[in-house]
Length: 358
Image (tube, rainbow, N blue to C red; front, side, top):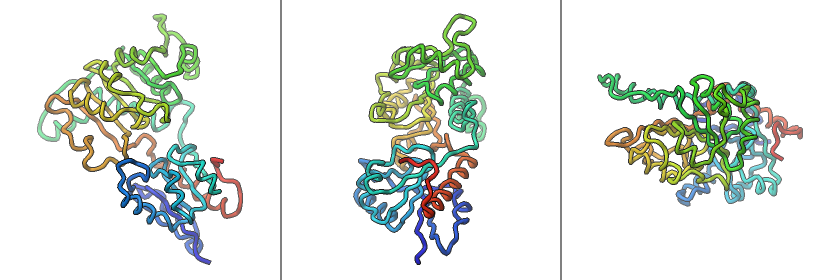
């Protein structure tokens, strides 16, 4: 009997390999891919690259994905006749066409990370967001480059104490980051999302262990209009789930009213922001800095404006970029890969999958 062919996609760090080596090599043929091809359903993806992706994936019975790095739209699924099991990391994956997979009878299993303390807001994305805010405010990257090139003090930091932190979205991540900025730096917190009420913001403050009101009588988490948030916040941080409704929800109309001294941070999803509008604002130097961990197209193409423009020079804003690292911790990835291996064994036995999507 031929070994079961398994593909592990987009494992940039090679962390999956020791976990998948626990599968018996005589029964399982595992191939690991450390690069990502352009998404099948992206408008800029040529047909030749789509065909290359199909050629890569077509031989495999089991495909293990890493988050949303490789989308699986209906058109791609239809071209993978050998696919019988699709495993993803995390507990949801908006890049999978679940209806098409269900129609094909292809089970989908997720993976849970039990290594972080989500209840206290200690998860990796929260930490990364706070790190970006601090790096942008304290001018860390330009100052590092200056010292290493022989320079010294060439700019100045932006203080956070007593300033306004604006969170677009007050779910788990938005509230946890807001809590830290409020407690650690004394920042006033304002929040907006399409359905946010002051009552809901008060309940979120309570769930974070904060009083509804501060000593000055101001709401700890103050629900405001979208325009008021972008106009008054010294730091604007995005914490929304990407959906058809939220795609492009932040545009030039919002960005143009930001303070010249303000900082814009996105650790959620690139397409929440109209990328061309953000690039334009930054090229004109209309805000202090943008700190971005997510982009419309990932990994960033080599000719992307984010890579090629000389940010922070000739009147342009500073731009701090990280390669979608908000969730990338070794413990998290190890836990996810362990769950994927366990799900393969469960599937072969006919047992229920861990974190089944259906």
